[in-house]
Image (tube, rainbow, N blue to C red; front, top):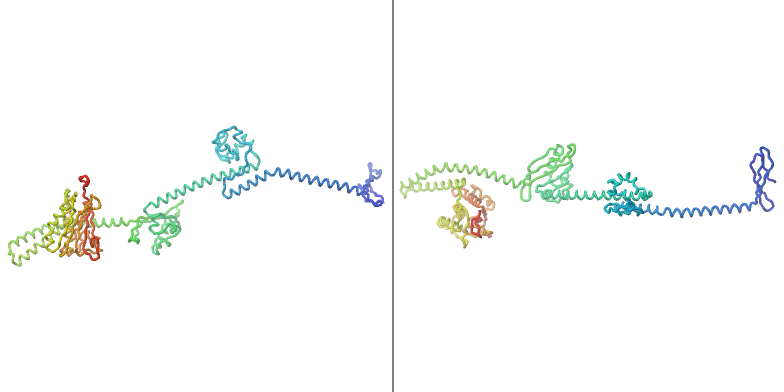
Amino acid sequence: MANTVLNNQKGSIQLLDIGGQFIYDYAIPVFINDNRLGTLRLGLFRTRAEKAVNKIIISVVVTIILAILIAGFVGSLLLNPVTKSIKKLHDSSEQALRGNLDVRAAPMLKKNCWEIMQCHQKECPAYKNFHHRCWYLAGTLCPDCIERKYAKKIDSCQQCQIYKQCSGDEIQSLAESFDAMTLSLKGNLSDLKNAESILNEQKALLQMILDAIPDFISLQDQEGRYVSVNRAFCEMLNKNKEDIVGRGNDDLFSGNQAELYNQEDKSILETGTPLVKENRVPGSKGPKWLHVVKIPVSEAKDRVRGLVCSGRDITQLKAVQEQLTQAQKMESVGRLAAGVAHEINTPLGIILGYAQLLLEDVGKDGQIYEDVATIVKQIKICSKIVADLLNFSHSRESIITVFNINEAIGEVLGVVEHTFNLNHVMVKHEYHKESLLMKGDKEKLKQVFINLLNNAFDAIEENGSICISTGPGKTENEIKISVSDTGIGIAKENISKVFEPFYTTKAPDKGTGLGLSVTFGIIKDHNGTIEVFSPPLPRKKKEQGTQFIVVLPSGLNMKKGELNG
């Protein structure tokens, strides 16, 4: 059937079979104004049309593929520098995260500010810097630059010709911004490390100062934990610093002490009132006295954040105070002794005078004579006691001369040796072969030797020996005198008391306890020392007795034979 087309259709297509071949029959109506003149028909072999269409499709596909390949090649050429820059920036960021702040992400610059400006200021940080443009660097020396960091100077740099010629693309700007950030971060970290180093040095210096202070010092927080302590505090507790810091009173002290210290610390932290006290604490070498001060540490708004405790060992000070108290007591005793001696001396003299008159008036063979002689003897004992008291309470003016210590001892022995022999007490003397000259009060030192010999004699009573020897001391300007006996000796617990006034182990009629005290005072006035050993040195198991060793400075220039000072 022929392909027909209606008036209201734009066209019609039919596939016609003409005997083994197919033809596309196209029918299109033709109009002039509203009148249809006829029908335009066109026939196309289907096989030929399909071949033409296939050729067109193939050419289009090939064209598209070629376009894609060309676009990919061109794109890879264009994107390769970008991807390399991004990869380098990524790698640099990873290295920066690992702590390497010396990494650089910016590429080499093609144009440099010193070349554009023909600048030769080698001290400028931008000079010969091939990776960083000048507006990213602080301290540049260009006259138009502002002496500020990047964030402050970039606005002014945007007006500079160098910025306009070298501004680069966004990736380069990003890379240089990254480098500027790492440089700034490195500088800040360097400043922090320097500040940390300074703080550590100051901390070490402060700790060294605290450790050098003999007073013990500690710092506690609000919870009572020890934050910092010095060496003296560690030595007091016999612990290491690491064993103290971070711990509380309960960990460091015994139960009662810890409870007391916790109550004190709590009161200071709550009230803000300092505490000053003296503590008597046990120690390895005996009890100690500590002067302790606890002060609250406050911050803003008077809020207490902790407390500082400082303390000082005042054991020696306490001993000095006790000695001062004893000295004041002995001063009072001396004044009393002087008054009593003066009051007693006059009636004793009168009694002695009348008793001696009675001895002259009575016969020597009667009982009355013996009784009066006993009175005279006892009065003389009382007079000696009074004389000892006066010697203890008053000191006469010293007469300083140069004399031979051997001769002074010989004079003393000449007085006492006969009396000692009557009780079968032998006195041996071992003088140094050369004269031992010294400068001092000869009469007072003779009194020292008399007291030491009498003390040895009283310890022996009878049938014994006393040895007195002289020789040089440890130095050529010292003289050493030793007085030893074979008496009963001194008990160990009494050795430290023998030089105390009025201390004696003798019977009441045998001594006043002032002899060794007076001896100690005379030796001290001559800047000497006296020691007592019982038994004598060198010690033997079965040996008894006592040894006094006196060391006196000669007061002479032994090389020139002149008097010192």
